[in-house]
Length: 179
Image 1: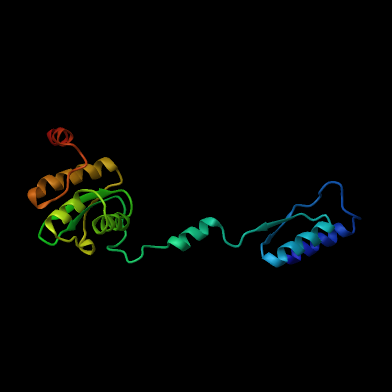
Image 2: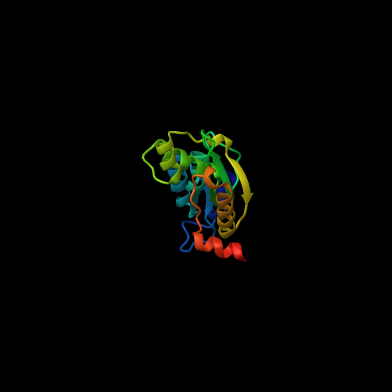
């Protein structure tokens, strides 16, 4: 980078003082704070435009901050229908298009804090605890409708052992069942 800048500066030096219109493309240089200002000033004297590129962009910082899952409950999978076992033999069945660990983290937060939802209501009423690390993945579907249908069938099949309410209404479920 620096050699390119020096060559460009030498080539414009022979052409006289600063040209009226810029004949050379600007030179891209990684931005290093103290050096940044000095290089720009020196290159400007020779009519060389400088563009500074950042060593790290915002898009590269966000994954570095968020990273992968901290202490994932289960292996990372998306677009799943899942079942969370509860301590007294019942279970919670749900579906998510996002990573299962993100959804389980939300459930854990809801259960441990003042959240809402069927899982939290059952845990408070029954005084049981969910085993997030034993979560079972029943199916994977990229379509939300397919996941909701599978979720409804699993909830219906589990009967009283399941504390979930299906995403689909009873009418939608019966309509799909008749097809």
